[in-house]
Each structure stands twice: as C-alpha cells, then as structure tokens.
Image 1 (cartoon, one colour):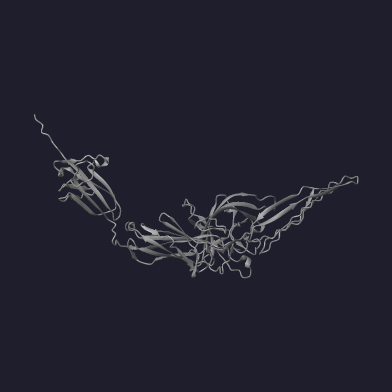
Image 2 (cartoon, one colour):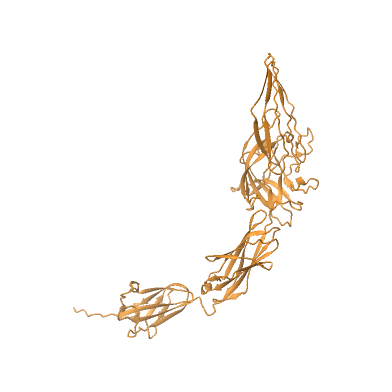
Length: 523
C-alpha cells in the first residue's frame, strides 16, 4: 500500500491562513479506492472564529468481472474554535487608545513567598525568537508584533498595519515547563509617566490541557484552560467580570520550533481611576438645635461617555433629619427628578437622568437639627455610584465629608435631676401638702457626688449627661426615719433610684420616708 500526500502550510504576516489541499490515497490491490477529503479554511480575525471541517470519503472499485461499485462514507463535520493569538490594550469602553507610546506589558512569575499569589516575582525568562526566521541559527521563528519575544514588550501604534495597533503576544516554551498546569503568571500593564491611567495587574493560572503532538512531522493544537483574575478590582472584560475561566489555543506551529503562542481571549481595558467626582457643601458653618441646614451634593462626570443610574448616599450626623419635600436636582440649569429614600441615618438619592460628559448633577436638600445632634459629631459623608453608558461598568467616588460646628443655643445637651426627701404618711410615694420635707438628708450619686437637701427637703443636680443615673439615700443621715413602704410600685421599696435622662431633659428622683417607732425593751 502506498500513500501520496500533498499537504502544505502557508503563513502570512498579518493573517493566519491554514490551507490543506485534498488528500488522495491509492491502494494497488487490483481495485481502486479514491478518498476525497475536502478541508474548508477560514481567515481568523480579532473575534472568535470557527473553522468548519467537513470530511467525507467517496470510494469506487471493480471486482474483475466488469462490475463497478461506488459509495460514500459518513460525513464528519466538526468545528474547532480558534482565537486570534494577539492580546490588545483598549480603553475603558473598548475603544483603541489615541496613542500607545510608552505603554508596556510584561509577564511576571508570582512571588513564591506570597501565599496569595498576587505579588510580583521576577520577569518570565522567555525564549528568544526572530522574524524573519534565519535557518540553522538555533533561534526560533517569531510572530508579529512581538517578533523577538521581548519581556516586557512596548506597545506600538503600527501606522502601517492598523490590525496590530495596541496588540501584544508572548511565546512560552513547553520544554521549559512554562505551560504546565498550575503555573501562574501576572500580566502587568504599565502606562507611561503622567498618564491618566494606572497600572493594571491580572493573574493568569494555567489549567489542564487537551490535545498533543501526533504523528511524524504533524502537529495538533493543544487547548489550555486558564483562570484570569483581576488583582486591582477593575473589570477585565467588557461584560464587567473581574474573574472568568476560559480556554486558549496553544498553536503548535512548525515555524515556532516547539514554542506555544498563547492567545488569551480578553482585551485588557484601561480605565482612568477618577471617573466621577462628588463634592459636598452646606449653607452654613455653625448651627444649633432647631436650625435648618441646606446641603448640596455636586456629582461631576469626568469621562467621555454618559453616566446612568446615578445614586448618591448621604450618611447624616446624629440628630439630623431630612426635611420632607425639600429635595431638588438639576443638570446644566435644567431640573431633573430626584427620588429620596431614608434608611436610618442614610438618605439615598436616585435619578433616572443621564449625566452627560463633563456635566454636573446638583442635589440640594434640607435637614432639621434636633437636640440629639449635640451628642453627635456634626460630620456627614456622602458617596456616589453610577454606570457607564458604554460598557455598564460601575464607578464610584467618595466619601465627601462636611462638618457642621454645633452650638448648644437655648438647648443644652446636659439635663437636670430634681428630687425631694419627705415623710410619706399614706405610703403612696407622692408628697401631699400635709407631708413635710426632711432637711439635711444626704443622697449619693453613682459618680460619688454627695447632695444634701435644703430645709424643704429639696435637692437638684445640674449639668447631668444624658443616659442612666442612680441615686442612693443615706439613711444614716436621717436618724429616727426609715424607708416608707410603697403600696403601688415595688421598685420604690429600695434605698436607690434609677432614672434615665434625655438630652436637655429633666427627671425627678424622690425618696419617701417614715418615722421609726422603737419600744423600750424591759429586762
């Protein structure tokens, strides 16, 4: 049996063609078998491409008597997903950057001493390549745009070839264990100095692979699984994910002499760190309980696209209350509808209006200051979040703080305790006109303060902080008296009293006593 094979690969610098001519095999056994294997090829682009492979064999033979037999085999129809082996650096909305000068991208090992796998180690030592490939110089052929397999690689604008603008690629060497399952790398994008963008870091962990080299002189693509994770919290796909699992085709190319060209199916988006800004201000610097303070939230769009679903959350200080129907909003002098929702001390403002690029959304509202504000700091903070109109990425800013200096005014945060010690004749715990007060009785507070009653049995404690306080009657200061039993409140049959005072409030602390009658005991 002899096989005649006519198979050739053609490569072009800017595109990836793979053309297989039909294969015909002839068996010389007194009969003839013809196999027709049509292979359809398709040019890959920057998007995912599908190459359909339709394989059907037709045969014909004679048995020596003049009879001819013909037939067809079953059709094998498969699709193999190929991915353009070029990564690309894009803007936040998926657009090409106007200038890639100074941008570089590198592949780093993870730091072996870092258990989180998020710290940089050394740069990956990539095998050197060249393009065009010079024969017999022990240097592997490279691929554009990174023809020399440099690490880090500086991006190019490529005016002569727009398809390569802002792209990068790296060749990993399986013979050096660079594509083993479990291997982790960190892809680092460094913008130039004074750029509006910040460095990006993406961890890539290689998983299992399928496929291997087969036959003599033949190769088969290996499909590697990997997990890409954003280490800076920014999305790594236009759909907003910060982590996803994908597959990559390791192109086993004879021209690359055993190197694997890894094509990760995501573009690295660069977003400026400050995309929206919130500023908080008020109509006054000082206030006192009973006043109304007017606050303003200014939300500025700093990106080149509109912002939707703008939501501002303001955490009011203790003792501040939102004035109903006081909320107003405007963009560029035009009124917009603002809805408000109160959740505890948080006030959430929302609008369905789109905030155009460079515009400012102003939200104005009033708050009423209550006496409880004297116990707070007077500081409130606001944050804002929104969705970009192009890629639906969520952006945010804040907190923006404002402090209002509070004065007591006619309302003080401290309260007053007033009380009396009296003779309770009917044991009801209340003083009537015929029930005299006891002078010089001593009451101790929980902080050790000692108070003595006046000639009418009255006492008071001023400048008491809000909260719970305890007073105890010293019976040793009342010879001939003891606590009067209370027929209505059991808790008053005690030597101590517990009171709770509100800010600026007044509470009463009374003690009822009764004379002690001692009989002489005769021996």
